[in-house]
Length: 294
Length: 235
Ligand SMILES: Nc1ncnc2c1ncn2[C@@H]1O[C@H](COP(=O)(O)OP(=O)(O)O)[C@@H](O)[C@H]1O
Ligand SMILES: [Mg+2]
Image 1 (cartoon, chains in turn brown, cyan):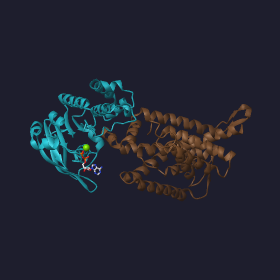
Image 2 (tube, rainbow over the protein chains, first blue to last red):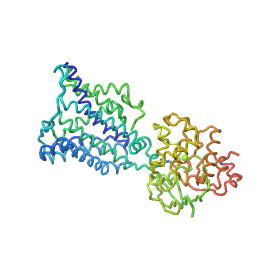
Image 3 (cartoon, rainbow over the protein chains, first blue to last red):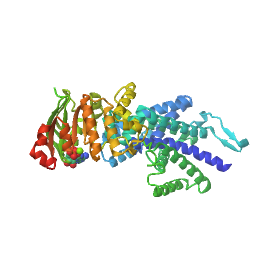
Image 4 (cartoon, helix red, strand yellow):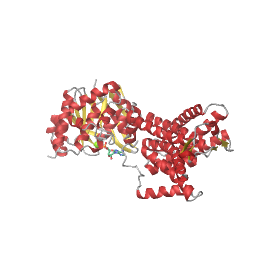
């Protein structure tokens, strides 16, 4: 029963990683860059939701929507101001800009919200707890919501990519930017939309994360960001199902590793597994095999 | 007014001066071909007309309108399409999705009809409608690339080495299709290394040598020209 409980918690944490990993993987697949500021967009989303609930007294659902809106605008702004001018530049320049953007966001957060950790008002989020096996296994509402949210997001996103005009345009830009332009696709607008979606998902992940782990600091986003990036690479960066599988596996490995091997080494185990997988499958679990790369 | 008029364009790749003052024109309903050795600058010219590259100087007029600063993604809406070198179909999409992307600039309601029209011209593609494009044979991929370009209903169709890497029988087929498109009223700008085929289908031709036009005239006349025969027709 304890194992089952750990497993569910691992899947739940992994679902949050998966939602973050989607942002990395979509931006990588379509804009061909690693947006290292993505983790910090999560943090901004969490702070905005925090303010909405704590200071403005809004209900959690409204707070989530506001956080998503703010992060969407933030993502589009970051892309157009910092990354778009570097579209033709070497990828190293883009990478360093992204790292700089990450520090910029962290320091802005420090300026606005201060260095003291904020306690995320997760008690405002009232969700029913699921009790199974006559009370032998209880699953908290947040755990459940994270898993369901991940499944729903994956479903909506896959449909969007496969069925809508913008989704198809994203797949074209991902494959061949020049050919996409010849079709009449506005590449800048498509990349903007990719950042918008990734950042809105980051806001969702931020709220989920802080509901489960309610300590909020300017650096709150960086570790989950790095782990989600790992998850994206693990699953095969550029692949949407890969982000989901990589995220969930990573969450499960982390929780089980902490529970059964060592609490301190939990994160080390995660990265060790990544290294081993990449030794045998350099493209990640689903890299290459999956056609639906975006 | 010419359909396409290029006036003294210069195109660079960084410090490399690839096109050094090229001028030519394409009249409505013509087939014009641009021939030249590998590396002469043929693709550079087509990519510049399509807006993927920008000339450092000179003018490009399409139906009398200067399109120097029009972004590449707007060109298709103006009525021109480029079927690029190496096909550049979307390998991971299905045949049908590729065609739909070709019609990206057109109203959604017209796409199904156009796909049906294109399938009539390319029955082979209809059989492969749901197949992932990357799994098609080379000839089929070339057909798909041309069909995709046709989906935008271009008045000017630019083709960059459509016969490249294809078996002779397929080359014949490709040139038959070019003749059919022309007969249906499409103006064609054709780039080829296969000078024999290109000159026999074209009305007029320009010979490109390292970024400049060295010769031009009626395609038939060039086909007879001794210098052209020696340099490009192997006799
Ligand atoms: N992306 C590029 N970067 C630098 N030089 C290029 C690039 N593409 C083409 N060139 C150079 O420009 C010249 C013309 O190339 P291209 O237009 O591809 O010739 P063609 O299509 O006639 O074979 C060649 O010397 C080629 O090496
Ligand atoms: Mg070429």
